[in-house]
Length: 371
Ligand code: SAH
Ligand code: SF4
Image (cartoon, rainbow, N blue to C red; front, side, top):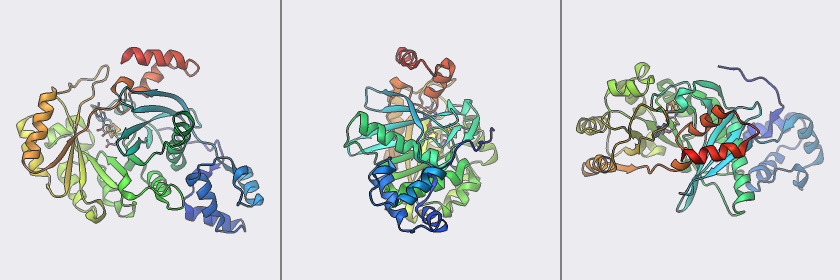
Protein backbone atom coordinates (compact mmCIF):
# COMPACT_ATOMS: atom_id res chain seq x y z
CA UNK A 1 0.00 0.00 0.00
CA UNK A 2 1.28 3.46 -0.86
CA UNK A 3 1.64 5.95 1.98
CA UNK A 4 0.01 9.37 1.66
CA UNK A 5 2.63 12.07 1.22
CA UNK A 6 1.95 15.42 2.92
CA UNK A 7 1.71 17.28 -0.38
CA UNK A 8 -0.90 19.81 0.64
CA UNK A 9 -2.14 21.88 3.53
CA UNK A 10 -4.59 20.41 6.02
CA UNK A 11 -8.10 20.69 4.64
CA UNK A 12 -10.83 22.71 6.29
CA UNK A 13 -13.13 19.79 5.39
CA UNK A 14 -11.19 17.49 7.74
CA UNK A 15 -12.38 19.23 10.94
CA UNK A 16 -15.28 18.11 13.06
CA UNK A 17 -17.06 21.06 14.64
CA UNK A 18 -15.37 20.52 18.00
CA UNK A 19 -11.94 20.21 16.34
CA UNK A 20 -12.57 23.48 14.52
CA UNK A 21 -13.54 25.17 17.79
CA UNK A 22 -10.29 23.90 19.34
CA UNK A 23 -8.26 25.08 16.34
CA UNK A 24 -9.70 28.58 16.65
CA UNK A 25 -9.25 28.67 20.43
CA UNK A 26 -5.60 27.62 20.12
CA UNK A 27 -5.00 30.50 17.72
CA UNK A 28 -6.68 32.95 20.11
CA UNK A 29 -9.80 33.43 17.93
CA UNK A 30 -13.41 33.26 19.15
CA UNK A 31 -14.52 29.63 19.35
CA UNK A 32 -18.08 30.34 18.24
CA UNK A 33 -16.82 31.37 14.80
CA UNK A 34 -16.53 27.62 14.14
CA UNK A 35 -20.34 27.39 14.10
CA UNK A 36 -20.59 30.19 11.56
CA UNK A 37 -17.87 28.66 9.38
CA UNK A 38 -19.64 25.30 9.49
CA UNK A 39 -22.83 26.99 8.43
CA UNK A 40 -21.11 28.64 5.46
CA UNK A 41 -19.29 25.51 4.39
CA UNK A 42 -22.11 23.02 4.70
CA UNK A 43 -25.52 24.64 5.21
CA UNK A 44 -25.06 27.55 2.83
CA UNK A 45 -22.58 25.64 0.65
CA UNK A 46 -20.58 28.76 0.06
CA UNK A 47 -17.03 27.82 -0.76
CA UNK A 48 -15.67 31.33 -1.16
CA UNK A 49 -14.51 32.69 2.25
CA UNK A 50 -14.71 36.25 0.92
CA UNK A 51 -18.48 35.90 1.05
CA UNK A 52 -18.55 34.68 4.67
CA UNK A 53 -19.79 38.05 5.87
CA UNK A 54 -19.92 37.32 9.60
CA UNK A 55 -16.49 35.68 9.88
CA UNK A 56 -13.57 37.88 11.05
CA UNK A 57 -10.96 38.75 8.43
CA UNK A 58 -8.11 37.57 10.66
CA UNK A 59 -9.65 34.08 10.72
CA UNK A 60 -10.01 34.05 6.94
CA UNK A 61 -6.38 35.21 6.65
CA UNK A 62 -5.27 32.40 8.94
CA UNK A 63 -7.19 29.86 6.85
CA UNK A 64 -5.71 31.25 3.66
CA UNK A 65 -2.16 30.75 5.00
CA UNK A 66 -2.61 27.46 6.83
CA UNK A 67 -5.55 25.49 5.49
CA UNK A 68 -6.87 24.33 2.15
CA UNK A 69 -10.49 24.70 1.10
CA UNK A 70 -10.11 22.91 -2.24
CA UNK A 71 -12.35 19.98 -3.11
CA UNK A 72 -11.57 16.90 -5.19
CA UNK A 73 -12.37 17.35 -8.89
CA UNK A 74 -15.08 15.63 -10.89
CA UNK A 75 -13.33 14.49 -14.04
CA UNK A 76 -16.12 12.51 -15.63
CA UNK A 77 -19.80 11.92 -15.07
CA UNK A 78 -22.35 9.78 -16.83
CA UNK A 79 -26.13 9.74 -16.62
CA UNK A 80 -27.89 6.40 -16.83
CA UNK A 81 -31.29 6.02 -18.45
CA UNK A 82 -32.72 5.27 -14.97
CA UNK A 83 -31.53 8.64 -13.60
CA UNK A 84 -28.50 7.28 -11.73
CA UNK A 85 -25.51 9.53 -12.23
CA UNK A 86 -22.02 8.20 -11.82
CA UNK A 87 -19.02 10.41 -11.04
CA UNK A 88 -15.33 9.79 -11.33
CA UNK A 89 -13.65 11.93 -8.70
CA UNK A 90 -9.96 12.82 -8.77
CA UNK A 91 -8.11 13.30 -5.50
CA UNK A 92 -5.19 15.67 -5.00
CA UNK A 93 -2.55 13.06 -5.79
CA UNK A 94 -4.29 12.03 -9.02
CA UNK A 95 -5.93 8.88 -7.60
CA UNK A 96 -9.55 8.44 -8.66
CA UNK A 97 -12.61 6.96 -6.98
CA UNK A 98 -16.22 6.54 -7.98
CA UNK A 99 -19.36 7.95 -6.41
CA UNK A 100 -22.90 7.40 -7.62
CA UNK A 101 -25.97 9.58 -7.07
CA UNK A 102 -29.11 7.45 -7.03
CA UNK A 103 -32.50 9.17 -7.15
CA UNK A 104 -35.60 7.63 -5.59
CA UNK A 105 -39.03 9.13 -4.99
CA UNK A 106 -38.30 11.30 -1.99
CA UNK A 107 -34.52 11.14 -1.76
CA UNK A 108 -31.23 11.41 -3.55
CA UNK A 109 -28.71 8.95 -2.19
CA UNK A 110 -24.98 9.31 -2.69
CA UNK A 111 -22.97 6.11 -2.78
CA UNK A 112 -19.50 7.07 -1.52
CA UNK A 113 -16.09 5.43 -1.75
CA UNK A 114 -14.00 5.02 1.37
CA UNK A 115 -10.73 3.78 -0.17
CA UNK A 116 -8.89 3.80 -3.48
CA UNK A 117 -9.31 0.13 -4.41
CA UNK A 118 -9.92 -2.47 -1.71
CA UNK A 119 -7.79 -5.03 0.13
CA UNK A 120 -10.56 -7.54 0.79
CA UNK A 121 -10.46 -9.08 -2.68
CA UNK A 122 -13.99 -10.49 -3.04
CA UNK A 123 -14.01 -12.65 -6.14
CA UNK A 124 -17.27 -11.22 -7.51
CA UNK A 125 -16.22 -7.58 -7.16
CA UNK A 126 -14.38 -5.49 -9.67
CA UNK A 127 -12.84 -3.24 -7.01
CA UNK A 128 -11.56 -6.37 -5.30
CA UNK A 129 -9.46 -7.18 -8.36
CA UNK A 130 -7.60 -3.84 -8.05
CA UNK A 131 -6.10 -4.34 -4.59
CA UNK A 132 -5.81 -1.46 -2.14
CA UNK A 133 -4.02 1.67 -3.32
CA UNK A 134 -4.70 3.75 -0.22
CA UNK A 135 -7.26 4.89 2.32
CA UNK A 136 -9.18 8.08 1.64
CA UNK A 137 -8.71 10.81 4.24
CA UNK A 138 -11.79 12.14 6.09
CA UNK A 139 -11.76 15.33 4.03
CA UNK A 140 -11.60 13.34 0.79
CA UNK A 141 -14.71 11.42 1.86
CA UNK A 142 -16.52 14.64 2.82
CA UNK A 143 -15.02 16.22 -0.32
CA UNK A 144 -16.73 13.68 -2.62
CA UNK A 145 -20.08 14.68 -1.11
CA UNK A 146 -19.43 18.41 -1.33
CA UNK A 147 -17.94 18.34 -4.84
CA UNK A 148 -20.95 16.39 -6.12
CA UNK A 149 -23.41 18.66 -4.27
CA UNK A 150 -21.88 21.70 -5.97
CA UNK A 151 -21.82 19.94 -9.32
CA UNK A 152 -25.51 18.97 -9.11
CA UNK A 153 -26.52 22.49 -8.09
CA UNK A 154 -24.51 24.05 -10.91
CA UNK A 155 -25.37 21.56 -13.64
CA UNK A 156 -28.77 20.08 -12.87
CA UNK A 157 -30.80 22.27 -10.53
CA UNK A 158 -30.17 24.66 -7.64
CA UNK A 159 -32.87 22.69 -5.79
CA UNK A 160 -30.92 19.44 -6.03
CA UNK A 161 -29.99 18.15 -2.59
CA UNK A 162 -28.26 14.95 -1.56
CA UNK A 163 -30.34 13.50 1.28
CA UNK A 164 -28.79 10.10 2.09
CA UNK A 165 -25.37 8.48 2.13
CA UNK A 166 -24.39 4.84 1.67
CA UNK A 167 -20.77 3.73 2.05
CA UNK A 168 -21.09 1.24 -0.79
CA UNK A 169 -18.66 2.58 -3.36
CA UNK A 170 -15.09 1.40 -3.57
CA UNK A 171 -13.38 0.16 -0.48
CA UNK A 172 -14.13 -1.44 2.86
CA UNK A 173 -15.21 1.41 5.16
CA UNK A 174 -14.31 -0.41 8.37
CA UNK A 175 -10.77 -1.01 7.09
CA UNK A 176 -10.50 2.80 7.05
CA UNK A 177 -12.32 3.04 10.37
CA UNK A 178 -11.04 6.32 11.82
CA UNK A 179 -11.36 8.43 8.65
CA UNK A 180 -14.86 7.09 7.91
CA UNK A 181 -15.86 7.71 11.53
CA UNK A 182 -14.68 11.35 11.39
CA UNK A 183 -16.35 11.93 8.00
CA UNK A 184 -19.60 10.51 9.39
CA UNK A 185 -19.45 12.83 12.41
CA UNK A 186 -19.00 15.75 9.98
CA UNK A 187 -21.98 14.61 7.83
CA UNK A 188 -24.20 14.37 10.91
CA UNK A 189 -23.30 17.71 12.52
CA UNK A 190 -26.49 19.73 13.05
CA UNK A 191 -24.74 23.03 12.44
CA UNK A 192 -23.61 21.70 9.07
CA UNK A 193 -25.26 19.14 6.77
CA UNK A 194 -27.25 17.67 9.65
CA UNK A 195 -27.84 14.25 8.07
CA UNK A 196 -29.62 12.06 10.58
CA UNK A 197 -28.33 8.62 11.61
CA UNK A 198 -31.18 6.97 9.69
CA UNK A 199 -30.00 8.55 6.45
CA UNK A 200 -26.51 7.07 6.51
CA UNK A 201 -25.72 3.40 5.88
CA UNK A 202 -22.37 1.76 6.33
CA UNK A 203 -21.81 -1.47 4.43
CA UNK A 204 -19.12 -3.89 5.53
CA UNK A 205 -17.77 -7.18 4.30
CA UNK A 206 -17.49 -8.30 7.93
CA UNK A 207 -14.27 -7.06 9.55
CA UNK A 208 -14.99 -8.58 12.94
CA UNK A 209 -12.52 -6.62 15.14
CA UNK A 210 -13.87 -3.32 13.79
CA UNK A 211 -17.50 -4.43 14.15
CA UNK A 212 -16.71 -5.23 17.78
CA UNK A 213 -15.51 -1.69 18.42
CA UNK A 214 -18.40 0.05 16.69
CA UNK A 215 -19.68 1.38 20.02
CA UNK A 216 -17.61 4.50 19.29
CA UNK A 217 -19.02 4.93 15.77
CA UNK A 218 -22.02 7.25 15.23
CA UNK A 219 -25.16 5.04 15.32
CA UNK A 220 -25.82 4.83 11.57
CA UNK A 221 -27.58 1.96 9.75
CA UNK A 222 -25.43 -1.11 9.27
CA UNK A 223 -25.42 -3.36 6.21
CA UNK A 224 -23.47 -6.60 6.23
CA UNK A 225 -22.34 -8.06 2.92
CA UNK A 226 -23.33 -11.64 3.64
CA UNK A 227 -23.65 -13.09 0.12
CA UNK A 228 -23.71 -16.70 1.37
CA UNK A 229 -25.22 -18.60 4.28
CA UNK A 230 -22.67 -21.45 4.19
CA UNK A 231 -18.99 -21.01 5.05
CA UNK A 232 -17.62 -22.88 2.03
CA UNK A 233 -19.52 -20.68 -0.46
CA UNK A 234 -18.80 -17.48 1.47
CA UNK A 235 -15.09 -18.28 1.51
CA UNK A 236 -15.18 -18.82 -2.25
CA UNK A 237 -16.77 -15.38 -2.70
CA UNK A 238 -15.07 -13.47 0.10
CA UNK A 239 -11.60 -14.47 1.28
CA UNK A 240 -12.23 -12.54 4.50
CA UNK A 241 -14.47 -15.45 5.54
CA UNK A 242 -11.33 -17.53 6.14
CA UNK A 243 -10.28 -15.17 8.92
CA UNK A 244 -13.77 -14.27 10.17
CA UNK A 245 -16.24 -17.02 9.35
CA UNK A 246 -20.01 -16.90 9.80
CA UNK A 247 -19.84 -18.00 13.45
CA UNK A 248 -17.36 -15.25 14.37
CA UNK A 249 -19.23 -12.69 12.26
CA UNK A 250 -22.57 -13.37 13.92
CA UNK A 251 -21.04 -13.42 17.39
CA UNK A 252 -19.74 -9.89 16.67
CA UNK A 253 -23.03 -8.70 15.11
CA UNK A 254 -24.92 -9.76 18.25
CA UNK A 255 -22.83 -7.28 20.21
CA UNK A 256 -23.75 -4.32 17.98
CA UNK A 257 -26.14 -2.17 20.06
CA UNK A 258 -29.37 -2.63 18.13
CA UNK A 259 -31.33 0.10 19.89
CA UNK A 260 -30.33 2.69 17.34
CA UNK A 261 -30.01 0.39 14.32
CA UNK A 262 -33.37 -1.43 14.76
CA UNK A 263 -32.64 -3.87 11.92
CA UNK A 264 -29.39 -4.87 10.31
CA UNK A 265 -29.48 -5.15 6.54
CA UNK A 266 -27.93 -8.24 5.00
CA UNK A 267 -26.81 -7.82 1.42
CA UNK A 268 -26.96 -10.96 -0.64
CA UNK A 269 -25.68 -11.00 -4.21
CA UNK A 270 -27.58 -13.70 -6.09
CA UNK A 271 -25.29 -15.72 -8.34
CA UNK A 272 -26.63 -18.36 -10.67
CA UNK A 273 -26.23 -21.96 -9.40
CA UNK A 274 -23.97 -20.89 -6.56
CA UNK A 275 -26.09 -19.32 -3.80
CA UNK A 276 -29.59 -19.30 -5.31
CA UNK A 277 -30.65 -22.83 -4.26
CA UNK A 278 -33.28 -24.05 -1.73
CA UNK A 279 -30.50 -24.94 0.74
CA UNK A 280 -29.31 -21.32 0.61
CA UNK A 281 -32.77 -20.13 1.63
CA UNK A 282 -32.70 -22.61 4.50
CA UNK A 283 -29.20 -21.39 5.45
CA UNK A 284 -30.45 -17.79 5.63
CA UNK A 285 -33.40 -18.86 7.79
CA UNK A 286 -31.02 -20.65 10.17
CA UNK A 287 -28.74 -17.63 10.43
CA UNK A 288 -31.03 -14.61 10.50
CA UNK A 289 -33.51 -13.47 13.13
CA UNK A 290 -36.53 -12.19 11.19
CA UNK A 291 -37.32 -9.44 13.69
CA UNK A 292 -33.88 -7.89 13.56
CA UNK A 293 -32.90 -8.44 9.92
CA UNK A 294 -33.67 -7.08 6.51
CA UNK A 295 -32.42 -9.01 3.48
CA UNK A 296 -31.46 -7.06 0.38
CA UNK A 297 -31.05 -9.28 -2.67
CA UNK A 298 -28.74 -7.97 -5.39
CA UNK A 299 -28.84 -9.84 -8.70
CA UNK A 300 -25.18 -10.23 -9.69
CA UNK A 301 -23.91 -7.57 -12.03
CA UNK A 302 -21.71 -9.12 -14.73
CA UNK A 303 -18.60 -7.28 -15.83
CA UNK A 304 -16.22 -8.15 -18.67
CA UNK A 305 -14.15 -11.16 -17.58
CA UNK A 306 -16.24 -11.99 -14.50
CA UNK A 307 -16.60 -15.69 -13.77
CA UNK A 308 -20.09 -15.65 -12.26
CA UNK A 309 -23.52 -15.40 -13.85
CA UNK A 310 -26.64 -13.53 -12.92
CA UNK A 311 -29.68 -15.75 -12.24
CA UNK A 312 -32.83 -15.38 -14.35
CA UNK A 313 -35.40 -12.83 -13.20
CA UNK A 314 -37.82 -15.61 -12.32
CA UNK A 315 -35.20 -17.20 -10.05
CA UNK A 316 -34.66 -13.87 -8.28
CA UNK A 317 -38.42 -13.46 -7.76
CA UNK A 318 -38.72 -17.04 -6.48
CA UNK A 319 -35.85 -16.54 -4.00
CA UNK A 320 -37.39 -13.34 -2.66
CA UNK A 321 -40.87 -14.84 -2.38
CA UNK A 322 -39.62 -17.84 -0.42
CA UNK A 323 -38.10 -15.49 2.15
CA UNK A 324 -41.17 -13.22 2.23
CA UNK A 325 -43.39 -16.27 2.82
CA UNK A 326 -41.35 -17.09 5.88
CA UNK A 327 -41.88 -13.65 7.33
CA UNK A 328 -38.61 -11.93 6.41
CA UNK A 329 -38.36 -8.33 5.29
CA UNK A 330 -36.75 -8.86 1.91
CA UNK A 331 -36.21 -6.50 -1.01
CA UNK A 332 -34.50 -6.89 -4.36
CA UNK A 333 -32.16 -4.11 -5.37
CA UNK A 334 -32.80 -3.22 -8.95
CA UNK A 335 -29.39 -2.80 -10.49
CA UNK A 336 -29.01 0.88 -11.10
CA UNK A 337 -27.05 2.51 -13.83
CA UNK A 338 -26.05 -0.63 -15.67
CA UNK A 339 -25.55 1.31 -18.86
CA UNK A 340 -22.85 3.38 -17.13
CA UNK A 341 -21.03 0.48 -15.45
CA UNK A 342 -22.42 1.34 -12.04
CA UNK A 343 -21.28 -1.77 -10.20
CA UNK A 344 -18.45 -1.26 -7.82
CA UNK A 345 -15.17 -0.33 -9.48
CA UNK A 346 -16.15 -0.86 -13.08
CA UNK A 347 -15.98 2.68 -14.34
CA UNK A 348 -12.66 3.51 -12.72
CA UNK A 349 -11.02 0.46 -14.11
CA UNK A 350 -12.29 1.10 -17.62
CA UNK A 351 -10.91 4.59 -17.28
CA UNK A 352 -7.51 3.39 -16.12
CA UNK A 353 -7.26 0.86 -18.90
CA UNK A 354 -7.61 3.70 -21.33
CA UNK A 355 -5.33 5.98 -19.33
CA UNK A 356 -6.85 8.98 -21.00
CA UNK A 357 -6.63 11.83 -18.57
CA UNK A 358 -6.86 14.34 -21.41
CA UNK A 359 -9.29 12.54 -23.68
CA UNK A 360 -12.54 12.51 -21.83
CA UNK A 361 -14.68 12.53 -24.96
CA UNK A 362 -13.05 9.34 -26.14
CA UNK A 363 -13.70 7.73 -22.79
CA UNK A 364 -17.33 8.77 -22.90
CA UNK A 365 -17.82 7.16 -26.28
CA UNK A 366 -15.97 4.03 -25.21
CA UNK A 367 -18.21 3.74 -22.17
CA UNK A 368 -21.26 4.34 -24.33
CA UNK A 369 -20.18 1.58 -26.69
CA UNK A 370 -19.92 -0.79 -23.73
CA UNK A 371 -23.49 -0.22 -22.61
N1 SAH B 1 -16.78 -3.08 0.90
C1 SAH B 1 -18.06 -2.93 1.47
C2 SAH B 1 -18.81 -1.75 0.96
C3 SAH B 1 -18.85 -1.47 -0.50
S1 SAH B 1 -18.90 -2.82 -1.61
C4 SAH B 1 -18.87 -4.19 1.34
O1 SAH B 1 -18.43 -5.10 0.65
O2 SAH B 1 -19.91 -4.26 1.97
C5 SAH B 1 -19.94 -2.24 -2.78
C6 SAH B 1 -21.28 -2.92 -2.96
O3 SAH B 1 -21.32 -3.39 -4.30
C7 SAH B 1 -21.53 -4.10 -2.05
O4 SAH B 1 -22.88 -4.09 -1.66
C8 SAH B 1 -21.23 -5.27 -2.95
O5 SAH B 1 -21.89 -6.37 -2.48
C9 SAH B 1 -21.71 -4.75 -4.30
N2 SAH B 1 -21.10 -5.39 -5.45
C10 SAH B 1 -19.79 -5.54 -5.73
N3 SAH B 1 -19.62 -6.19 -6.90
C11 SAH B 1 -20.85 -6.45 -7.38
C12 SAH B 1 -21.33 -7.11 -8.56
N4 SAH B 1 -20.50 -7.59 -9.46
N5 SAH B 1 -22.67 -7.21 -8.72
C13 SAH B 1 -23.53 -6.69 -7.80
N6 SAH B 1 -23.14 -6.05 -6.68
C14 SAH B 1 -21.81 -5.94 -6.47
FE1 SF4 C 1 -13.99 -4.69 -1.17
FE2 SF4 C 1 -16.65 -4.60 -0.79
FE3 SF4 C 1 -15.62 -5.14 -3.23
FE4 SF4 C 1 -15.42 -6.94 -1.27
S1 SF4 C 1 -17.35 -6.16 -2.22
S2 SF4 C 1 -13.75 -6.33 -2.67
S3 SF4 C 1 -15.12 -5.65 0.50
S4 SF4 C 1 -15.42 -3.24 -2.10
